[in-house]
Image 1: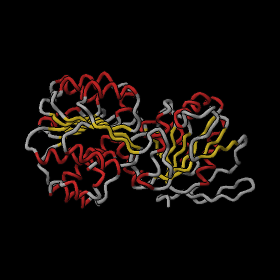
Image 2: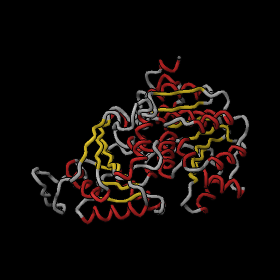
Image 3: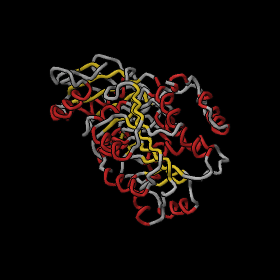
Image 4: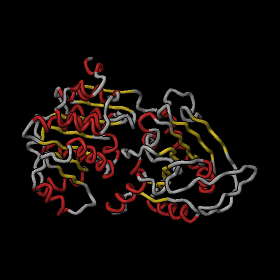
Length: 413
């Protein structure tokens, strides 16, 4: 195929303004998903693309989208995303690709932000809209948004949007779009409900799959600890002592995220929580500080399982297993971004039996039994996690039989 010969972004024949923006962003060699998707999208094909998280899916649709807007004086584009955080990352990339002096107006339409601000953006007749399905529908029902001229549609993390119950809202949005349009659908997994959606709303889509989707990246070292529920926090503390660098810890509930962040700060760690009950300004501030490495440990619900691109995350901890097995893969994708090395650890208690079985079957559906740890990983059973003393930022913890150094500082070196 022609796209496989694309060795660098210059081969795509992009407009000078976009080529200059890519050079400024230091985009030189396309990833496999970009090398396959961009030429097909530029040629006007509908695309169904799947690839492991962290492989560059955002640029795979953002580059042809911006090229279409730059090369056509009319028409607009809509990008739908499941979460505000992912939407913000997409919009940031779009603005970088457009450049600081672009005449193309944009609108960021998500829940949790003032409606008045969004109305002002929409009244300016934006040609690029990035948003979440719920708030997009709010504006469509108000009549404050028109999609008659929207001939380029992107659905990012489609599987997550369907998992979150956005199917009906997506169906409503499709009714406002013109029949003649180009649709790009990207996802990390490809369940049957996505195939049904593509059959209904896409025109002979080109199928692109880079690597296996129901696997954890090979460059992630995985460990599993069988542990009692009431011993998890002590074991988490020990793991944090043993590991250096930035960490994301996944928990089940919003309350649990807040409580754990508070407890870790009490015990000498720099930590903040991220979940859906936080105001958008607070969520933005937390992520900004985490990206700047102003704190080391992010405690998050599955709102952060997809899309968050923070290159310096070295470790993922599954303190609580996810409710949906597929989210295990997406959680793992928060580390080892763009080919880097990463590690992950999963706490599995007796109450987690069904969830762990579902994860094992997802990762290895051909396995004869459900007692296998994840690929590339090890299974460690600890009935009695190592003991340690509470510490502050300037002290070293004491443990039984092994010297452990506390590695928590502002820059998580």
